[in-house]
Each structure stands twice: as C-alpha cells, then as structure tokens.
Length: 142
Image (cartoon, rainbow, N blue to C red; front, top):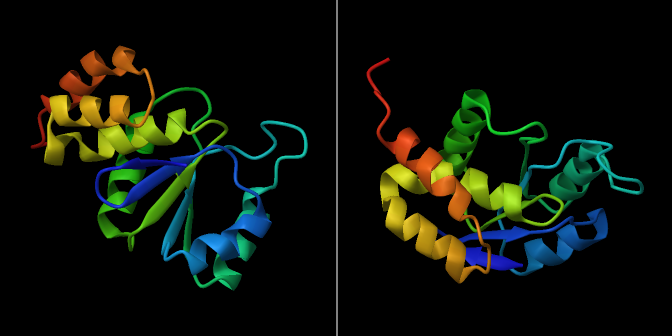
C-alpha cells in the first residue's frame, strides 16, 4: 500500500477478508477502481461492498477500464471531495487509482505537487503530466 497526500492510500487488488483489518487500522472509506471480471478469481464489487459495509466503511465503485473519461474524472472528484478519510483506493496494481487521485487533486495541489507525490509513491506516470496540465487549464464555467 502506498500513501498519497490527503490521507489517501492506493493499493493493488484487495480481498474481502482484508477490509476488516483496514477498518481496524482507521480507514473510513474504500474506492474500487477495478471493473468486475477483469481477471480470474478477482472478487466482484458486490462482495467488496458487503465486506466494506460489514466493517462500517463507506464503499464506492468507480471502475476504470478503457481509459480516462470526463465522467470517470468527475465521479472521482466528487467521491474524493465528499468521502471520509483515510481512504484506500485500489485497482489491479494501484496505478489507475493513482491516476484518478491525480486528476481529483490537481486543482487543489497543482501539477508539480501531484507529480511529485506520484513519484514519491513509487509510480512512474510522467505520461499523465500533459493531460493533467490540459485538465487543470480547462474552462470551468461550462
């Protein structure tokens, strides 16, 4: 598990049995960025949600499969803004969760701070710098 600013942790695939331990460590929310049936033996979102609810955690399923979309970014922004922290976001490796965290936090932290946090967490995602810059420069009046 890798830490990002804002009391957010990203991880590869979690299993339902791990959710209670996260709650015992103080985690308040879980974000699942993995689409169902992406890989054999992967737990379904429904199973993860039951485990989270049983542990009294908030649970969100924002699956990212075919790339980044405006709806995916918007859902991530809203979830990160309104979700109790600490948050654990997961996907297969943590990379997609990190990308969604970056887009959700670039307005608040700035591009350089977001990219530094990504690098500090051990992810090499320089390829998202330009899309982040374009996103941060968007017209927000629409």
